[in-house]
Length: 466
Image (cartoon, rainbow, N blue to C red; front, side, top):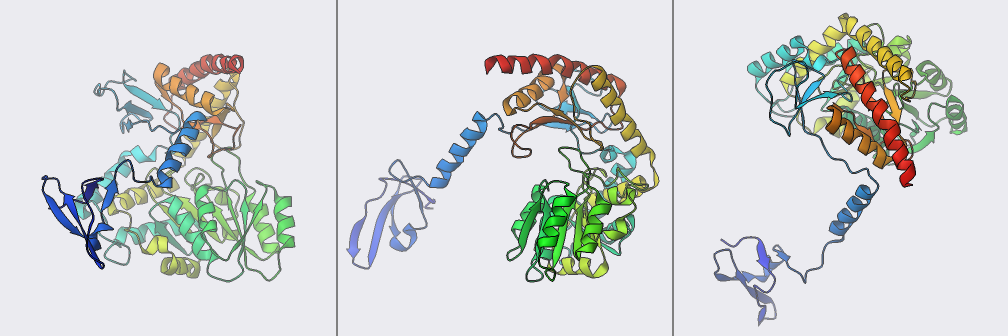
């Protein structure tokens, strides 16, 4: 068999007739065979005289720049221990067995987005395991092609009820739910104008950018005066949408949902609210900031995730029946992808129901957040006070931020993610702490002691080096 791989010089072109050229090709077995002209264009010819594609050069150049800036991302292989969360096992070391408290090879994670630890709740795990045994590993298709399980319908109804909406729709992730929903909405009518907060998530930006024909107006982050000025300047008869988040995950600040909805009503705009970092955590039943502030009925479309406060996987939107049915019927990111596995849906359904009825998970979370802040302040470790559960520790330099994270891991067995550009603007690099219900006082003491020792020392060394 002739393989699709030819070394330069392994063939010699020679004219057979004006309309046909054949080449001698040396295959892997060393035998030269003739390759018709019609196939030559399908063979990838490699060798020093072949011009390199510019994309390969661009890849190397950009990666070199990222490394030089200290923001190259290296994944840390950590195996979560369900019986000891937030303790993970460093997968690069031999597993020591189930020795508790924290032993060699174990790492305390301070950056998980499983905010309530619901991903390891035995009831959630068992619901997923039972569905896995009953229905198998995958969904088997898209929602339209054998991929709709009764569990999908149950979870969509539960999410609609959670937010006080008529209907809900599941997506394979929170990123996809934002991207697909916003793009579909903003291509539904001519002349759409979307007013987007300057710090909206990349998934929202992707959906807006993908909406050909729509205009995007970016307003200053959480600046209602700027938003109103831009709304007032827009044509009165243009279809308008305000897209914003409730809890912004990097700075930990919270939007004024009530006032934003009031502006939308005044200027005839719809509202699209991303509650990804709020669902499960805020409000009497964990429906998010809109529920906490009593304005869920004023938000047209609420988008959320099952992967953070609910500890599972998947994204969703909730709204009135016609809008959700339109997205179900039109959003390519929903239509043309395999649906969530029934085991994942079952686990998420159990988690949502537990979180709705058991407020102690939220209570414990915010008690832990307050305790960590008190201990950081008492030790003189600088952090940014926020109205949310997120505790940013500003560093301000990508190389230094990455080095602090590395040493927390290597010297103290603590995993804290460095947040660098492009996730945050240059100069605002930070460590992002997300204390949860299962972080103990002893774990907090270890973290505070490590930060107190590392931050000033490394920052002083960085200043001297400069």
